[in-house]
Length: 239
Image 1: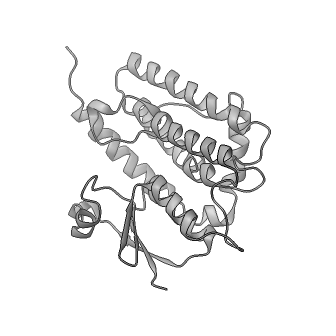
Image 2: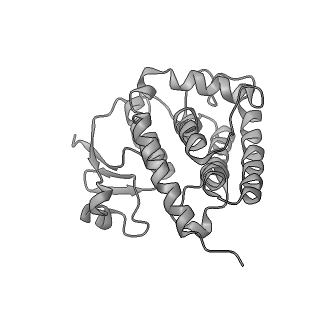
């Protein structure tokens, strides 16, 4: 079987979720790392001409883009037997996992390189320089985290006793969120406000397979600092 390839960036939480999935499935793969200092590679432009973003999965001539689509492709192609399932078995549970995964990306993450769109989610709260706008964005983000808190309450992982699709999608929280909070001057997740989510984060990041794929914290701090500086300096001035 030809080895799978991921067009990858070490700082991208969207890329790391794909690496986690491949490791859970026991699949061999190699990383084709984008060097952003040199601009986007020809391979990335060719493989994902619509969005021109990582991650992209290359599977023996087949090209799959967008991280949640890639996760479902991996789970559909390599399933059964001893292979680790990502999505739940039953249709309703699968639908719920997809719903909350989309909610998390839309309302909690929302990483964009467009300053005028950086208004929602954790990154939106972090990038606001105006105190009032930052406060509003933090309140909105806290509300979104509250919904996720209800979903994890009473469970070890979102999928139950083992990690699954939704755990991978929100798996950036234990490692990336602290960096965004530090560089953005905000506070989102604490044990008092979100006890179940906080406990889940501790359980998730302790898993050896998960921990070995996360990038060094100092790398993320440098990346986040640079990105937030760009977003703030490029934001349109309000009248």
